[in-house]
Image (cartoon, rainbow, N blue to C red; front, side, top):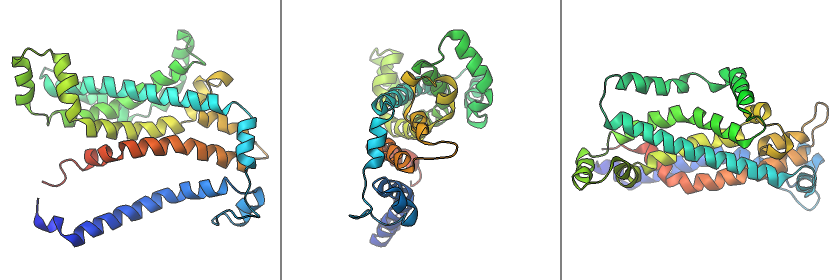
Length: 279
């Protein structure tokens, strides 16, 4: 690495830039959190001030816990998000490994076909997806959401992971074959650990849209027992009256799991994004 890139000034500048971007990104989250602990009047009168003795209120959280089954909504969102990410990473990694490892006629065409989902939004096919779920008897089930989100995340997963898997040493894989390892063993024990940063990148990029999505839960799973957190929070938003205390409290609780998972994946995410940038 160039010595100039490792100078104290450049290191300080890079950390300062990263801190600035982090603060800018977290500012809306901060505003939501502080306003969730205020009275309704204080939210509109002083939205950027911290809660004090006069403005502090837990009414929003009390409303969230009292109205609707918040913990069930949270559980449904967690099941859908984790299950979808598992299938996206598993099937996406397997397809990417096949495209990167095996050269066959139509390899490039197959890769292009699998990547088309990045350019074509899945919501265009909402009507056809709904008809398919009705015919399959999966409406108002969590499986309907898991299948849709898995299909939605696979194109990006294949596109990113295939590029990383092409960088895995062929000598390492061939040594495993000489030692008698099966292709599945080579894939799970040799290749996957080396592309862990890319896996974390794919997980983060898919996690947030799945967790925050309202469209497909509203269309495919609107029943009370399978509502997700985002859909369940809409009960506080009316056509004429909106309970802002409850809305902000629900959003604050919904943010926490995403923040925790982001912190867990952040180091691998940064490694995955910056891999190969500096030689």
